[in-house]
Each structure stands twice: as structure tokens, then as C-alpha cells.
Amino acid sequence: MTIHISSAFDSGNIVVDAIAGHTATLSIRKDQDSDFYQWFHFRLVAPAGETVTLRITGLAGSAYPDGWPGYRARVSTDRQDWRLADTSYDATEDGGTLTIRYDSDGAPAWFAYFAPYSMERHHDLVAEAASAPGVTYRLLGHSLDGQPIDCLELGEGDRQVWLYARQHPGESMAEWWMEGALAMLTDESDPHARLLRQKCRFHIVPNMNPDGSRRGHLRTNAVGINLNREWATPSNDKSPEVLCVRNAMDESGVDIAMDIHGDEAIPAVFIAGYEGIPGLIDAHRARLHRYTQRLAARTPDFQTAKGYPVSPPGTGNLAMSTNQLAHRFGAMALTLEMPFKDHDDLADPRAGWSPERSMQLARDCLATLAELIDEV
Image 1 (cartoon, rainbow, N blue to C red):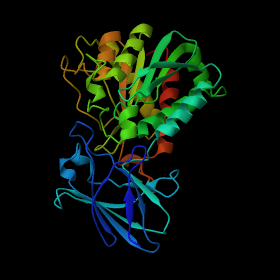
Image 2: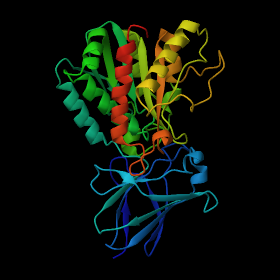
Image 3: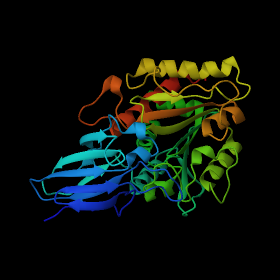
Image 4: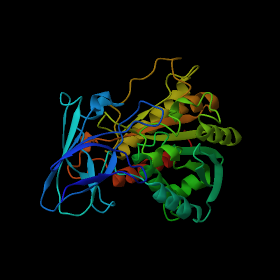
């Protein structure tokens, strides 16, 4: 029996270039109409007792080559529990090669860049949340492939809070975060959630890019568009996902916005702000500072030392969502980044950064918001 590798399923992505014995040479398919590639997700079947070597080549040309050193792939045999695989990276081999070694027990095993969040699970999440007391479902629009852009709304307060995720579909930790957020906000026994429902009206979009999610893309939608560069001038022909969400935001207004992401290279959880927007005043900047400092004090899974360079005043890219919303509405709009590698300050040698930690981080983010809601 030889080894078999396939990716013909929801969010699957791999190209089988060659199989020799129990070694497979693989590559990652680019996003449609785009040069972005980094996300992989495939299934392996191999004889029991064999050590399989999986070589994913050509990674020096990937979207974020700095994401591979120190990275370890995820593997699961039940698609529920994802653990770190035996992984190494050599930038000099075949244009940059990630090598995964796996001892097969004969059962199928799934490998992924991060624990996947399937579109079936997305629909389960929407169905469960929409049936919770006090939750209203709203269909904002459709993607280019005709998939719904789902929005869940709850809360009786005046503060308009928007939570949205997976503009970049390969950042699946973002929807795990959303699952944690919805579980907390619909928990009638949680005191922070009770306070937030009293003070705020939440608008929650768990997946802004269902087409890219299903197609196994890293960063773009069905026609190769990076949605987080469309917020200044979204259009029906290239970015209807952004257009319908921004239109709904214009209707409600936005006081607070959280855009949930994953970062390939930085082994930490951090927040990117809106310091570069035109006309930023000290009071607006101070709100974000209070929030990040309180979150860092609440959980060791968040820190403020590592992150992206801060844009100089007036240089912020208004095509990015949080800059656009901070400028358009005066909102406290933040981009939360979680790692594909691990949060090195509190590393987990078995699972790395995980779905469970993503969901817990959502609870910590929202509890922090509850404590500061009258200040932000």
C-alpha cells in the first residue's frame, strides 16, 4: 500500500507533485487570480507503522516566508483535537521546504496550517446563535459565489459594537475566536455579557469571506481580492462582502469595532491600532491605550511589546477596515492578531496556539470591554 493524499473538500489546499515510497513532495495552490499562498489543508492515508515524510516546497515565494521558521504544522486524526506535528523548515531546500514527519497508525490523518473552521461548522454556529434568546439574525448580502454574509445582533444598549472576522479566510483562528465570543455573549449567567448586552448593541459577522474559506484561500475572495484593502471604495463586482457590511455599519453607526485576524510571522497575540489616521486626537488614541493595557493585565495570552510598527500621523491606509472605521465614525477600531506559530511568552508544546485559546481570548477581550465600556 502506498500513501494517498487528497484535498478535495471544504478549505482543502495542496498539490501533489510527486510520491516516492513514503515521501511526498507537495506544493500549495495559489489563491484564485492572486499570487497569495500559504494556507494548506489535506488528508493523508498511509500504511500503519510507516513514517511518512511530507515535503511542502516553494515556500520562499509564499505570502509570508518569515512565517515558516519556527512554525509547526497541525495534525488531527479526529478533526476535533489538533496537535503540533514534527515539523522543520529549510529555506535553502527546493525554494524553501517545510518537512513534516508523521508516524502513521493506518487511520486517515488531516494536516493544516491551523486548525480549520469549516463552512459546515460556520452554519452550525449561526444556527445555534440565532436560536439563542435575544439574538436577531440578519442577512447582510451575498458573496461572489452566492454564499450568505451572516450577521447576528443582540443587546439593548446604545453603544454600537461591530465584531467581524475572516476577511482573510486562511486565518481560521479568527472564527474560533468568534465562536468563543458568541458563546459568552449569549450566556445569560455571565455577568460581563449581561453588562455588555445592557450597554451595547452587538453586530457580529463571524465570516466575511466564505468564498475564500471554502476554496482554501489564504487571503482573498473568489476573484483574488484582499477584502481588507477594499474599505475605502468597496464594489459589487470585486468586494460585495465589504460593501454590504460597510453599508450596514453606515446605517447603525460604529462606536467600537474589532477586526479579528491571524499573523503568520509574529509568535504573539497583539493589537494593531489606528494611530496613522488623519486628524487623530489624543483622547481617541487614549481609548485604545486603556483597552490594550487592561487586556494585557487580564490575560498572559496578550502582550503589548511585539506587534506591527505604528504608522506616523496622517499615513494610515484608509482602505483597511479599522483605519476606515476609526476615521469614518470616530470609533475605537482595533485589529486583533493571533499567531499561527504560538504565543511564545506562554508556549504550549503540544498544541501551540489553539482553537481553545482563541475562544478563551474572546472571553477575555469582551470582559475587558465590559470593564471599560463607559470609558471607550
